[in-house]
Length: 246
Length: 312
Image (cartoon, rainbow over all chains, first blue to last red; front, side, top):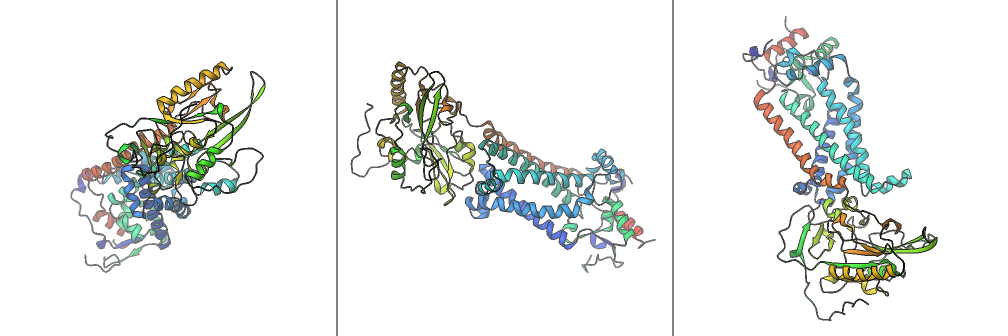
């Protein structure tokens, strides 16, 4: 398959796909939605306190005091819900030999149709594993630094642990929290952009399944496994099970 | 004796300064003020302080604050630390002078120093919660405060305290309301020994010079003025008998400055952070424009169907 050949391809609407492959259970999707929504609210309330020109975002939360109050609690919801995602997905995100191969072909990753030059990947490619592990690490650091910045909550933590956090330690926490927040948002942008650019991906988040062609193109080893396990839906009438007009 | 501020007339007076005299406003900008007020200062002469706490009482009285009744800790400090209600506290130190092997009782009235370069204001994310007037007063505007505690991280002197009642930050106002009608701070008014005096910053420096000369003549060779240049000078200054080692006065910083961490965080950091995020979004848009969407082809679907046994 060459890049040139792609120009003559007929792109398919997913309603024409005869095969749909389940990718995420309902619970996994709910879990992801909770993470997605809390992450977005955290970013908005965090931006408001990060750059003066964005302080107006506090209006979304009912003012500065409310934004300041809700941010750490949202953070705790995120940590708990992200831990759920971590447990669900960690086994599929362990590094393997093909990851290095995939990464060395990063220029093919970034070009539409470059998949032909990449190794067949399982449920997650090395880029997705990078998102998984970096967000895991960043959220742990944000939790630690965030607790030190929590003006109202910190005294309880100090008393419970019998420690005192110095002001200089809180300054470090502020710098680390802001820096890692920027990094986590950069990874979020990569994550969201990839889902948009690679058409058919959002289906996995909203409907829980993808087309067979999507699996073949992007996660062929995963598709082969699903076929082997018989965990696919074949719809000969080709409406993808939705009964929608093509 | 420094000439005291005369008692005010009982007629209502217009405030002599206000919003139009702001030189800085947290997380926002202000137009350059049309006039420059005379910089004012409070001078605390530690060598004249008798530790009577009249200043603490006057502060509570004028600001209508009531400190919680505490417990005795075996020291004269009461309360032990600044609180949202106690905007000033006397800190007592028993110090053995290694040169003379004698005990010296160092008493320092702690409170906001009203820095020319205020770390609290630099760190504050809430527009207008901290303001600085051209007479040098740094004031907290409570209705704009969100209680995040960033001022605590910004302050090199560990002064602001966040109230657990209304979740806003409190500190000495330098009695901005009294100063606005030509009066000095309440603590200064109450001080029985003129350990606290009030006037223009120039007057206070001149008065301090005379005090330092007097102290030196009495054997305090290192007497001096504490007006730390690291924060651009302060509008609350100390005369110290051991100005070469401010830290002996209950941890007064030797060389206070706004922490480089705070400056990086609220300076270049906020631009770099927003810039990087904006850049990543722009990179995504450009990539999409150049590459177009990465679509699944009919061939992909057919290959999948073949694999699934749905197609020969």
